Image (cartoon, rainbow, N blue to C red; front, side, top):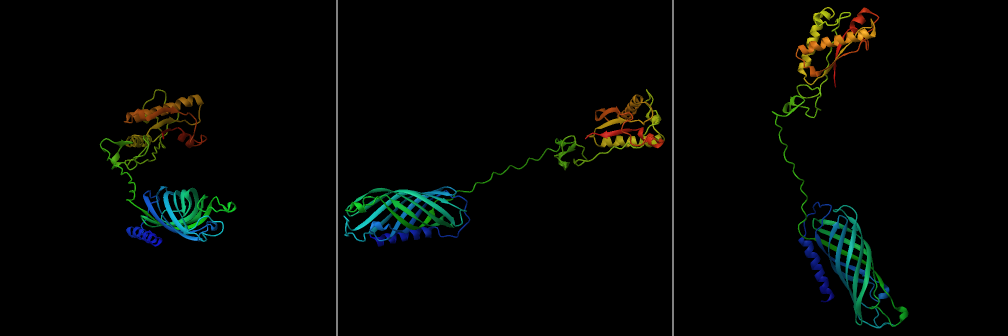
Length: 375
């Protein structure tokens, strides 16, 4: 096949591949691992010591794929044929034209996003088969270069690259003058490739669909004493004081106004009404409200504590405060509050007064009991 015929075949190959993939550019994944073919055409700027025209045409074909998002590997073959400038010049032992085929592997490292202009670095090694009128043989060769690639459809890229290829050819360009003999030649090259991926692109992974949540059995699931279907705060820790909607609330049980007569109750006294300061009915009403609160909030636990004023000895007042706590404790349990929800009774004697012990009114307020809500 003559040179014009080869040019025509390459042009048809490039045109056919382009037509097969002519479509609007679409968004592409960050990594397409399909195999591709890469027809290539380009030119050499030859080492002048080759005694050929300084600019030569070459063509080739690569097959490869991306092995990582930024790395591709190609197996390739390319060919060039050149005329000697002065085949019969002084010192040269052969004449006519000169040609070589290269068979090698090239790696490219890309920068940037898949569907943008991606600059890359190129490195390759190959075996180079040389032939002229008198000699033929193999020699190793290597190349380094850089280029830029652009995705134009979901299956097609364009690559343009330039670089330097060194060929350790010491046979096809030998001379009769040993002083002019060469051990190798370096050529610059510029190439254009149309990269065409084939096959269907890998389907994007489908995220697993979580099974629909299972509706709770409202008849069995209770959190903090509240049916789960009516509970607006189901993550509230167990034991927290909650309202009818299951959400935390602050519970305050105030016994202010429940005060005792001086030095009451006596030892063995159990009738709370007779021990309370006048009017005792008001104090009993406050105690009944406390009972109602405890029944409405079954998770609430309280500490029953008694106190005295500052009159008298500490040891006596300690016992008196314990009797006051005990008589309120008994009142609560006798009115339906479970003893398991009550801690104590505990006496604190003259400690922690809420008012001054220097006035009658202050001492009267200090003769008291408290229901201390446990958190």
